[in-house]
Image (cartoon, rainbow, N blue to C red; front, side, top):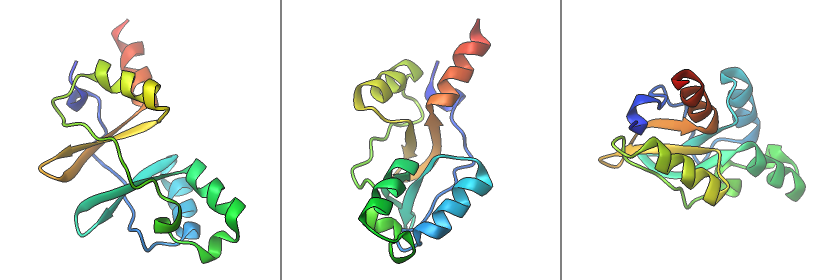
Length: 123
């Protein structure tokens, strides 16, 4: 199975300059736990609930932006990648979501939940 078959194509993204308060609202509104960070159409990072918690330890989240707490080194895969390899990457790298990138554009995202759902539907 290719990752394109189970990725979410409606990717919620954010900008590095957005405040953490805005990001918390987005996470709650869209019922997600993290999102890619995009600047001028280019993937520049990823932010998750754990990144926000680290920011909270550092001080008031009202004073912090996405750029202050995001993970800049993002693991990505193309849409043609094997879903099994993506699952292995998640386990090995201790990550919960992987953006799917094609021609330097985020075209989808796969989460652990997407993989679990695909496995459950197979059997």
